[in-house]
Length: 470
Image (tube, rainbow, N blue to C red; front, side, top):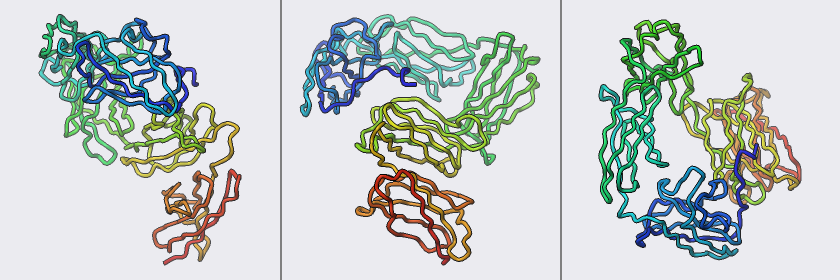
């Protein structure tokens, strides 16, 4: 699985303070700064797979990178894709440096253009009826922007002169035009996209959430099944009342098998199949509101962030993962969307043992965080899989809804927690080894708080907690 990610240099103990200037010596804010092998400096085409991005410059044109590998390297910079090419980054302006452990190396990169000679393009994208079009792609060279809900876009760094602007969106004909860009100024352009296919049919409807409330900002796709496969004919966005409209649809859709799909971040997609357009209004119901997960992956012994991670979340009864990704993050922080309720997590990072744990995402519409502490291959066990059985001290019945928290016995800080409904009263959670206290809280019962016996070197432990009714 890891070969899909380009190799990256190991973390080290060096730091770099880079200053990015334009050709005239003016600081360049919002420039991306990279380090790479020293022999890439001066090359006209360097693969981005050989470069490590350390950040973007601030208002004064500088940025600091830490935990960088020691040794010779090159420092390169780019602004809004101006130095991108078909084969990679133009690194002829890069500079060589020597990164030393425990020290901050100073570097200056001078880009081959002057900010004063750059212009900007901004405008809006609408349909023939004047409605703003979101999610349209606007490109000038290798600079790409996506329109927002208001259809607006801005390309802030474009070389002065004639710029070839292309705009595309699913279901519409591409728009291409040359726009004169003044140096140091802004060119205004209003783009009107025409339908790729047009006719006399129309479609309208409403998007509703799990509780029957209108869902604003949902994208509704009209997909036609044709002999050569499927294709999106048109898309629209729901308004504050959850309503959407599509007009000028091709007449052929009256007898074409169709699928309507509504998507919105934070919801499970809704689908509706129909044999053709009948002219009646449709209702799309998004039956599940999702939970935003922030996953932090670190080494269990050192606390170092894991910059590459594969994640799966599974739910009992479903054959496939309900959420998954293979991604990278310099900070070891990742995001995913989960169904409400209990899951089984799998977290994998290079050179570490796979990490699995149950996790309750809670009710829909919320946010949850989880830290996965992974044990290096061949490393000592520093994580204990703790099973807590919570019962009623009077009759021995399981306590189905409790909050289980493990704390550092010395500082009182929480190191692991789990809450939710468990009909069998069994709560399973990963706990870092060490001196711990166990706290269990449940409505209608007296709180439990006591030392947690965890034997050194064990990988699994179980404890029964008996709660007394108030």
